[in-house]
Image (cartoon, rainbow, N blue to C red):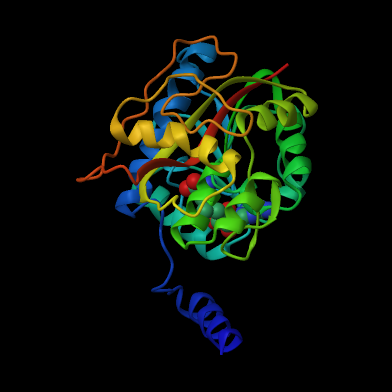
Length: 302
Ligand SMILES: C[S@@+](CC[C@H](N)C(=O)[O-])C[C@H]1O[C@@H](n2cnc3c(N)ncnc32)[C@H](O)[C@@H]1O
């Protein structure tokens, strides 16, 4: 049945450019407000590094262009890459409507060299993509090598606390502990994902020849979690800052051995810490946690 649905979907996309189940992240209200949150960190970093220059920016895994279109509207030269032809057609439509010239390529980021020469980019962004990819380390290195020395990268990653939250919301206490002791593999939803603490990201970026400028949690979600069955101290330690954040008494810049879901976490940064706007739930009881969906890392090629 699933195969038949996939076939119907593929045929509708190819023959009629139609897919009612596709979430256009440029048009979707929640996704576009998260895009603004990403850009509220990316824009100042770009301005600080490059001033008002027109830049060549790659959006790797651009989907419908929720970051690509606003950056193109600011006058930059945008290159978008995505495996999905349907998503790229959406990006092209949004660009055409706004009379923007953008370069779009269909394919895997792993094949980036077909379209992007080493050291040719000022900035590379890649949000909500690498956590899906088994070859995320290779892709990170490839993106790093595509950026000029001194150029910037803005990439997002899943924090462990996100999957711990997902597991506990389903009452899967052992799965929550398992997330903390791994950084990739099947996540609580069964599919392959990878997730990292700020410390693990710092190490990954160093291996790729990059310097992390900041690492901030973005797109917070309120989750109601029952911790009564949790016996793993690492799980409760990981979640503690997320609960104090839900109460509005977060500890800025604190860190645990595993993860730091505080509203503002910066690694060696050259700019003053910026505060992430809270999406506070209507009711915040003791069981309410404010959990980031992603970390956004801003890094510089050495
Ligand atoms: C969750 S969406 C994120 C889109 C966009 N970066 C954003 O933040 O709005 C993930 C996108 O990445 C694309 N993608 C996933 N893995 C990819 C890969 N290895 N190469 C190119 N595109 C990829 C998918 O087709 C999808 O459009």
